[in-house]
Image 1: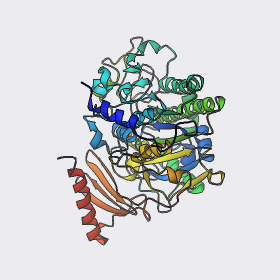
Image 2: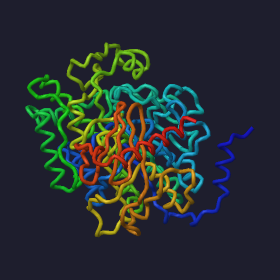
Image 3: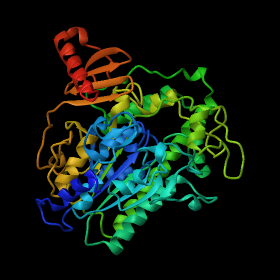
Length: 511
């Protein structure tokens, strides 16, 4: 018997489009980095070389008030649906009947491609009905599991078949994801040029384990030699001010990292070098994608969005069971060597499996507080780059927008609007496409929420209430974007009202 999802998709096909099909509708690419900090890339203040992302920013718009859900798989669920993840997931995966933006765009005449990490129902990756091809994508290549070795990734798939036979001696996951993405673009131009496309490019980088290519690591080891956490953090903060990506109300928050004199300096220098190498390689892959668009004449009318799924990860220890699970059951390399997960060895090659650590995560999230899994700005605020030559007026290219506040739940509604399709009332997000193309200015007024684990927040600009580890705090983000001053005692009525609002929102998912 046909499923509920079948009938819902059929209604989409039969629905009347607001605009006729055709190549006047933009191609759309979502590039999602994994566990990237707010200030890591060059055009948002970092010292890591990201020339391709920088060029997208120089010819596009950087938005400084863009939010995610503070966790990998929840962000992916919300990005693909335009809804808060609590509504569309069961366990850590999408409900089988979920209609994604890939479903909707495919039924609107788009070709749909996914290159990279899925991480929605990773513990049932052998179930063909949990595969991305069941959620609207025409093609898929990548890792179903959320965290894997970059040299021998567990659950690597091409479509619904294992792609383990594609893992050779020179395999590196970031490069493989980039290669697949650019090949999708070239194949589309050859075989489906009559249709626009949607490409979801979901990198694993720079999520742990800290794995990178030797030549990329060497590029950064000398650079970071002798540089302390505080020094890098201060340098980023000053650069952020100079290039205009630091909100007016942002100060450098109190450090949560250890003093440089109290840590293993050589190990932390190596960790930062490997992490930077991972970001550098990702940026190089993005350059491949841009080149493929140029070579096939598709760059002009392709909308590209870049963001991260959450703030930098503060994990200091992965744990044996978690690491073994990410390796597919054995802590050995392809040639049988043991993999160390102690975190004491210099990371980088496939014989190690370790994380970034809270000290360096504090640097990555400059100037904000805390990290992934938390509802403070360091956990949920993302760098966001929009590049769209045909849709952005030349006078706005290279600008920084510190006014508009948006959330990744807004992406699906925006894509539908640009595709000429109606936005379903079920979506929690709103279309901000009219702000992207300059047809509307200002800031959409609404309330945003976040909740994961023991940390949640409600945001009614400029007010933000954070409930974290059984304590609640009130901030004025316009005046204090770094959340350095709790002002709950100064505004008791607002504080209590926002606490009730957050509690009511959370309780709606418990019924």
